[in-house]
View 1 (cartoon, rainbow, N blue to C red):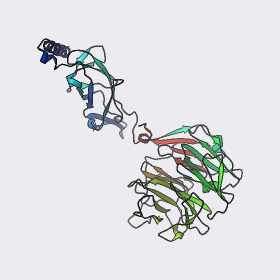
View 2 (cartoon, rainbow, N blue to C red):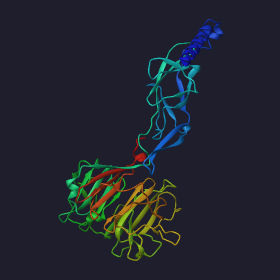
View 3 (cartoon, one colour):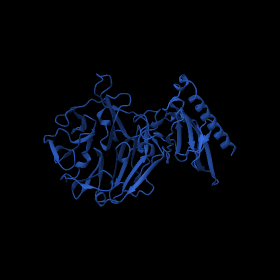
View 4 (cartoon, rainbow, N blue to C red):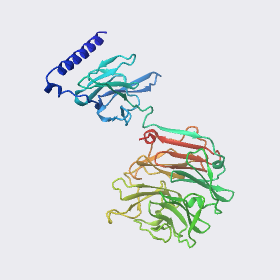
Length: 455
């Protein structure tokens, strides 16, 4: 009650001063304005609480600090809405927030009570409750107004570093495939596999509805499938190199195939093995092929359980980074991992050839030999998993472009996943990871929360 009386006295004093000014001479009148607005809003540091369970079963709260200066507030003058586009972390205490408000032409700022229509004079030292939107009012210096603004503090409702899986209804189409491979092209997920002695495919955009694709008589052609980003899916089938942009219509590129198996694709180049297991490259989307450069013995190249990823090189916008991995008969206990940097406009500044990622005595974190290997470019790294001892392996992650691989417990297959270790596939569009399995027909969609948040 005393605070309310002090606030009302302050407002009365301010209005009397304004009135006094209005009654003064013409020069004083010219110093007043009927125009005002809230032109800046910011918050101070806030507490963030994280809760965990101790070994005795008690709930333990850990308090940390969220720097308010890290979050910029936007002011929508058309709708008089003030908000932070970058949400505060989950667990941030927004019931006790100190904020700063600036007004145009020294306008007087007031805030509406949460429990009534009463208005209070705003002071920057007050701790305010922003657990729900608050209404601010600003009066012009000549006493006219007010203009009202709704101030909203957005807070994430989930942990950004948590990985979540969502299960869709099982798909009869996917369940019918005996072995499979998946790629993403133009926002659609394509899954091809073996069924009834043919290669059969399905595509979806949401994991719920699957569209059947044109069947291919060659039952093993799905193993040759690669996707060139924003271009087409390529496949060697029935002795010819073909491509499709929709899975329905296939165009034969050439019947005179100089290669036996497609193994990778960059944004502009295709890669394949010839009959001597040497890497061939095509710069014209499969029309012609030449032998690619390699810094080591070709016998060390992986020839079984192949997988690859292609991502833009972090240090420049003019190059791609390709990682190729699998099992090589010439290498014993770990996978054979190779990389290539494909440059576009750097005039030979980068080494544009295949390089073996050798495991040394200092590097004991090589990628294990996994059957049905899956590589996924995700969150500025590469994830790898597959079949190990007749069961699904842990998910390994490389943060250094394929040199070292560590188990990352943040990423794990769904606990309820009952997939077939012989018939499964996974792919990603960079935000969502899609996991499917033959036999069970399971369809899973997973993401790291912060990558899936809308900007």
